[in-house]
Image (cartoon, rainbow, N blue to C red; front, side):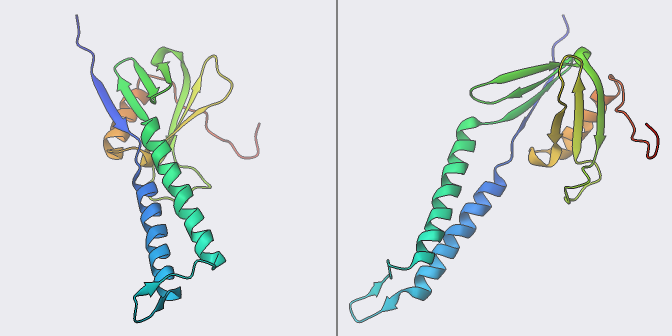
Length: 164
């Protein structure tokens, strides 16, 4: 029996950490600028509405980071399937059920890299699946895996301008 190869790609949380750090630094700097120094020490002005707004941003970004840590999204690539998995749900995409697949870039998203998205159309599903490679760890390895899978399935439809 042939041993099944698995590659696990975790969802990146770098953006959420950076966002939280930026909001925390902004909160600390703003509180430092708006606070008052006296002989007794440093006091923060708590009646400032901007301080509350920044505090709300810190709380929201903390909650979003915690929720994404709890979800623990992963993309697992096996020899004959792709598995989209999080802590609460798992969706298995068999390669034989893929109608077509396209590796390319999104027009509206301005991120670096020529190949930034994989669009997959399933045979018995109306909507396409989108895998944004930059959102997963080891995105270059993920790109190589997607190219390997693309050799096994039909290519995506090409857009022709002016013709339907």
